[in-house]
Length: 254
Image 1: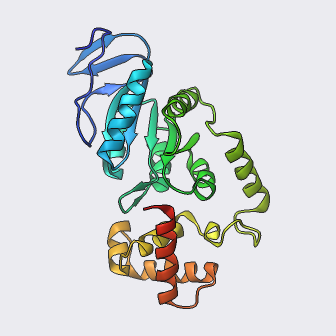
Image 2 (image 1 turned 120 degrees about the vertical axis):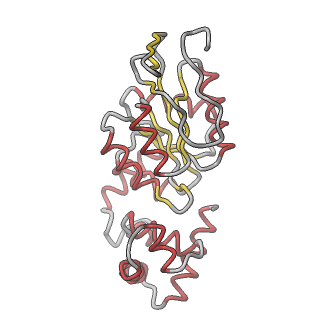
Image 3 (image 1 turned 45 degrees about the horizontal axis):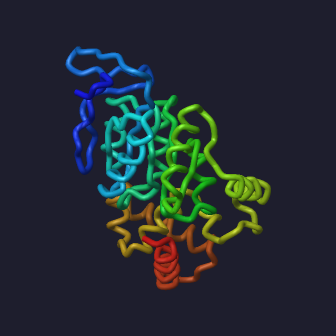
């Protein structure tokens, strides 16, 4: 047990830790309650163990955070939020073949008071607006300095938006243009969140059947998504769709 009255969660590469931590500053396990100084309970949701460890070191060094768990899949994240009751969840938008955007919506459904900060390596101009619409309060790219991560977690924990002024301008401009208007910044921006997820999986080389299995939908539904994507992007055939999606995924750095 740590001297400040908190148990430190087990150091695991991935998966949620046991116990429960909340904004009250209490950690409960097996009927035992210990009270200590109020800290911000943080759940880290990322499928890269080295990233999980990095976030943990940065936040614990700041002194006012308690890492209450880790998750590397959507299922682990939902289970951890239900059991651990964190104040803030740090969420990557890409968890293997799963969509962080859909996860944000689910997390907010099961714990409306949860504050969500997205930290991702992907295109902020395309994804920040979508993340905020899904229920996130903040958005950072993994290029940012450690101090900005600490500040952003504190900001969203207080219920405020954590966005820099440049990104805020981009989002406001996107709102003014309209998500589905002809003046959208990129043809890909015309895709719905679900279509964007399918588009990414196509670019990662998954077949229609593999996409259907990953998303728990029928192959016929995947084919409908593919047709919608081709229409919105002005693509005439399946070969061009695969090529366009593959190039886009490579540009995203994944």
